Length: 437
Image (cartoon, rainbow, N blue to C red):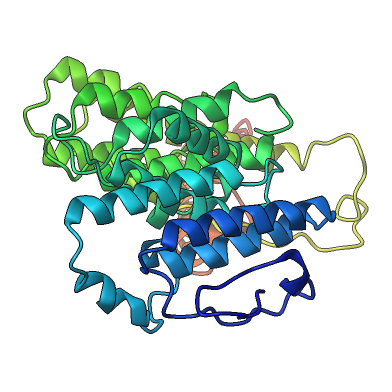
């Protein structure tokens, strides 16, 4: 975006290429003794460009390009060639303090010339700039200004850039969790236009992923973890799988958490928002309190019952569908394992009833034969040859139907109640005809 004019990179508004095509900078001027003078001239030139009405996005691209060349830490090109001046910087005879002060001056100057419009500077570049700002200990006012800008665009941030290490010796954690907590709280303080539905969901997902990474640190306190997890409202998370994973990781790394503290952590999880996979894992998780496991199981049972009610309600709806009119044959519903087990038990019980009836009929037949031997020649029991065989044949027929229909899918055509009704009817013989003998 700039044209190279001199060794010291003398820039002017007329030398800026506004077509968006970037050119290369001089590699000999970045760490020259007069770098501060070049920085001052860059600021004046950029002010002249702004006065010409250049779009804020183009101004932002100029700043990010120039800053990335000056400080390789701000560059996102991991595989790019190491800048030629970097070796000169490492071999510079200047003291570490002098080099540190130059970096600090450069970062503070960059923060002061950032365009105020939203999205003019990428959020990931601002996070990298904040990382360097915390490292070189810039003035608090510049740091606060950077944090406000980042909070404004927090939904565009990535987890990689948000993992900013803590440069404070008093902080026991590796990551700067307090910084992320400040960013999230500032984001929640903006009006609804900034933290709209989609932006809030993205930030919630980002926070859950950050918590999962920060939970690995054994020095992370429960108050820090709980404070960041509770900084977002409950409706911000469309699913609680990420939060559950973070809490499970924290409990695994911190086995000394008390029972009451575990309960407080698990209250953050809405078991109704867990996926079936997460619910299955939670139901078998020994690190969770018993109350939390019961809530997960009850939520899953409620979901199953709701699905069954919705399915059955579709057949009793007031509107007549093509299925109800007989135009379309309704598809057969696949039975659940539980329903199949209940049906098998019912069929088994009915088989036992049939066998018991057969045994009783055999006993009756033997008793009748004994009575016939005692009263041979009497016509009183002449009807036995008709009734008992017919009853036996009927019971055998019902038992054969149960066996046969069980093999071919009896459930699809009749219910166990129908079979039971037939058995009851089979037990009732025809009314006896009065004997005339």
